[in-house]
View (tube, helix red, strand yellow):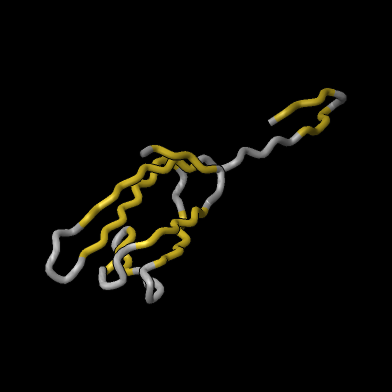
Length: 88
């Protein structure tokens, strides 16, 4: 249930019952007539909780929660100062 990403966005794909309402992190998601969905989610640096819920008209809500760790790629600069090479 724990994932990591070096990309600022992730794509969540799946399929739910065609008559279910689908919500990812509080945002209602449009799905195809057969229930397929494909949604891009933007991550914040650090730990991100992704909450996916599906609810049919007369059914209990089904919820899946995933944790995604986003670590922005670090940049390395090599430059020479007064004849010395430093790395940052």
